[in-house]
Image 1 (spheres, one colour):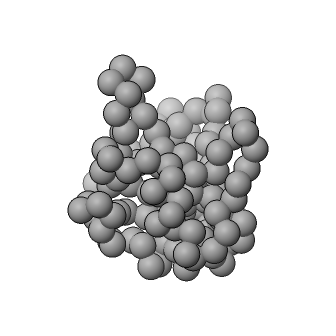
Image 2: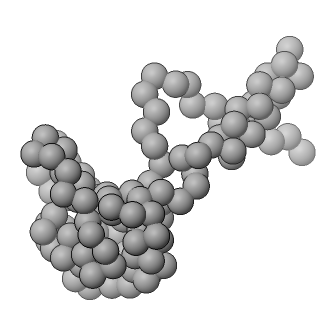
Image 3: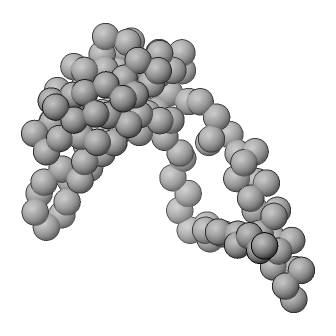
Length: 125
């Protein structure tokens, strides 16, 4: 039984590590945002590195996540660029830089997987 679970966990971990969603893409995850940062100021901060995708009216490509109850920023958001190399330049330049007094943590965003089980393997000594 334990070998089967361990085998499944190893296989899932290998799949996640080899997944294309972990590779650089044109969408960045930006954490450490001040509550006073809005989508316009975030777009302004990143637009010097390339064209920030405009998207459609339904789905903006600069998006800050807000708390449903308080309406305050949750401190993170996403910025999508038109080209992968622009996103890479923005990530390298902005990671650790301050925006409105708070240091940003910038990384490539992972693709959202709905309905798939999350497997967290346990490593045994």
